[in-house]
Amino acid sequence: MRWHNLLLACLALQSGFTAAGFSQPAAAWTDPSPHTVRFITTGDNVRLEVLDFGGSGRPLVLLAGGGDTAHVFDDFAPKLNANHHVYAITRRGFGASGYADAVDVNERLGSDVLAVIDTLRLVKPILVGHSIAGAEMSWMANAHPDRISALVYLDAGYSYAFDNGKVAPVSEMMKLQAPQPPPPSAADLSSFTALHTYDERVNGFARPEAELRIEREARADGSVGDWRNQPGGALLMKLISNGRKFTQIPVPALFIFANPHGLGTSVDSSTEPSVIASAKGYNDALAPLTEKQEEAVQQGLPGARIITIPRANHYVYLSNQAQILREMSAFLGKVR
Image (cartoon, one colour):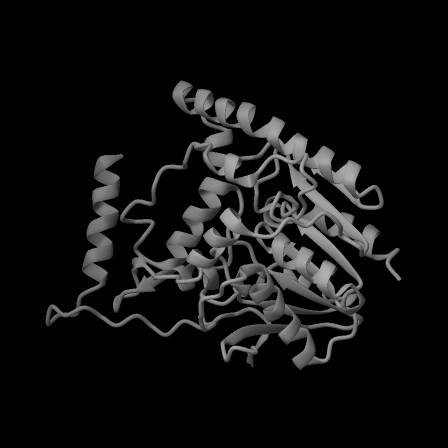
């Protein structure tokens, strides 16, 4: 195996040089996703990237999880546009969106979503959010319930989205250390296509290549470079540590939880005793906290629909996409 890897590395190195010995520039990459891009300016003059995936029907706005951009939905969004006109927003401080700090992070990030709704003149859209986007959706539901028709929380219904005093704080969950997949090799970093393949290999699904290209620099030869700086991370940490507590969600809401969590193919299918023990220990600690959160949502929001998907990844809309689409369709079909 070592010789095989060495051969691949040599071939990759050889193909990156001309006869004169200089690195070949990589061909320009084009995002194949069927969306258009526009920028919308917020009240504090920050430009937000908004993707329009087209479609017909009631508008639906996708909100990314922490660290991701609207492009993380490049493959998922087109599967929704048979019944919806689908948009996705890149949060301030990430990707192509601008950045400015905020004192009240909940209001600032929530107002950013409202600015997009206002500028696009969307009539009572559905908001669908992953992970930390639950905070933005809950802010909208409490501050402007008349402006949206429904919410879908994709593993996003944690304490930053609902907290009636009986929850498991997400800060406690974040202290747990999940076992990690093996890091990408030099071959995996030889191109973004190779990195995409690595992502699929270790997770069982892959985020779109456009998202991977936003996270990391591209070198002149097309290989994967350093991580990009994402200034919005500071806002999200501020939100988690000192955000608002939402005790009501006064619009129809679907909460989907992954519990216990799937940790990716390379971890879930590992036969290495230390990895198996680490994964078990992690979920043995995380599962009761997630159950406590689910119970709090069920008791505090009796009108909400709650779905639990065992062994789904935190990126539940990618790891269990068919089921997510079915649950969303069944729920949204009953929303007035």
